[in-house]
Amino acid sequence: MTTTNTTQSSERPRALITGGAGFLGSHLCDRYIKEGYEVICMDNLSTGTADNIGHLIGNKQFTFVNYDVTNYIHVNGDLDLILHFASPASPVDYLEMPIQTLKVGSLGTHKALGLAKEKGARFLLASTSEVYGDPLIHPQSEDYWGNVNPIGQRGVYDEAKRFAEAMAMAYHRYHGVETRIVRIFNTYGTRMRIHDGRALPTFMRQALSGQPLTVYGDGSQTRSFTYVDDLVEGIYRLSQSDYSDPVNIGNPQEVSILEFANEIIELTGSDSEIIFEELPKDDPQVRQPDISRAQEILEWEPQYSRSEGLSKTLAYFKKKVQV
Ligand code: NAD
Ligand code: UDP
Image (tube, rainbow, N blue to C red):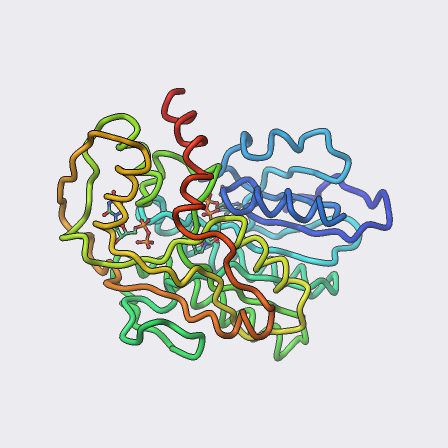
């Protein structure tokens, strides 16, 4: 157990962001501070980094707590909102940390929900398009139950998130906690780690350093990539809504991984070639969000095309590759 030393210093709404030092979590810290919240970022820095929140240190609206949320969580004072984002998210990370991934999705979600109940706070779960597994329905809408292999390598992540959703709904139905579930589709932007193994940072790093781009399988599998600012806007809107069923947030612009690799070669002006490597087991063949629900409930849709988002992200990766 730990206690934070934070005390309420104002009438601002207060949010706890677990995983707040990660890629998405740190962008959320920025957004909720901008919206006037006092933000407590709780993270064990397992896949995140203090660099992502370095610019917030010293800000009176911000506190960082280095803590593993699979243990009992205590926060002094009131809380209005908990955004539960702690979890490895890259396949490379969760294959290296299978037990921690299962624990943060199950025990971590339980602890965060318990805290939400105790504080009367609203709770928002970072779920994922991975709950659809290797989908048999295309595009994926929220009423599709998914096609997940529970005992496959990716099962540690997918099933943890499915459990987390079930746990959130149980706290909602049984304890009356106000819960929100966002199913996030592949998102990219600044603050991604260039060695996190996900397709986009890997291709950017390879293209910018003149190495071959490693496309897995024949590259015909598809993904739909969302620019981080669009995702953050969708999450903010969902957190302010009164809607408790899951909502897909993602950009429906679908692309094959081979085409995506070529786009990055073109964007970076690289001479890199493409090489093909073995397709990881259970790698989903297709993925594309049906965003009708987000459009209707949140009046949300992405504002950035893939080429706009990638161009905005290029300078960041150039800097990272040079370091
Ligand atoms: P990330 O790895 O950058 O961030 C995850 C953060 O959680 C890291 O800072 C890590 O240190 C922290 N963390 C992990 N286990 C913890 C624990 N036990 N206690 C405290 N902190 C812990 O990944 P991300 O891309 O920012 O993903 C954030 C969330 O969004 C995850 O829950 C992920 O499942 C979800 N998500 C992300 C994407 C995406 O495309 N980025 C897609 C779907 C879902
Ligand atoms: N991928 C690839 N080369 C890489 C990394 C990933 O071809 O170096 C593929 C991966 O097999 C998957 C897609 O790109 O089909 C997206 O992978 P990512 O890890 O970004 O996310 P996923 O959607 O699989 O969780």
